[in-house]
Image (cartoon, rainbow, N blue to C red; front, top):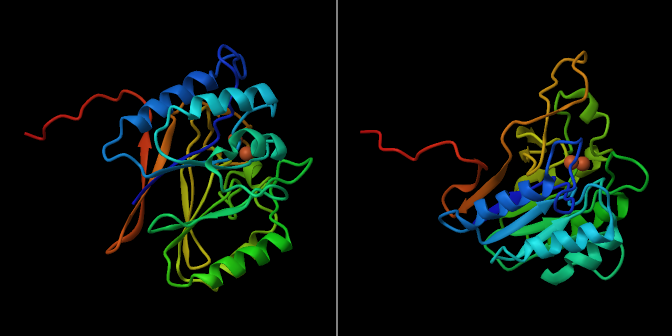
Length: 264
Ligand SMILES: [Fe+2]
Ligand SMILES: [Fe+2]
């Protein structure tokens, strides 16, 4: 099974630039073409939040139109730039989003069970799952202890070393870690939000963040580096599951980098 994770689309309508330079519409179009050109084709696409940049209804409608170009099922969780009700209204075409409350759901149709969490917290850029959602997760994991499972959410539950992003990470990361640690079938916790690829050990499993399809965030590992975006390559993560190896995650950058060419 192959899962494509696209993150931080920050979608804006065609021609509407971000920071005067970034073109999220064009960047998403390129990412969609990239996914359509992958061999093998992913079985499913997960969008890990910041689906639109400014949370407007027209942007969600435009995003939904773009996503129809993808031939495989697409599932989305909200990020801090999203509005929950507009996400539900425009991106519910995959049929698994609950009719009300947090946009958390389980996709049970594949060899890997996909658990999507809603870390959107009103009025702040940091994330929060809340005790009720963490209990729900614990019950869902307890119900299928033998199924390989991947968890998707927007806010990473770990410190990345990029200080200004760590200030707006998942607030209740310790509570999530406590639940994940109880369920060894969790092979992956995959987030977005940081607009960079980062991995760490988390609660006995692997936690990763995905690159953005739009702009990337500067690699600010020193506190004197100011908050900034950079034009490093956009990309997606491809999470490959096989019976023998479990979940293995690959970076697939979007763009023309030359090749492939023979080693000979
Ligand atoms: Fe973002
Ligand atoms: Fe975010």
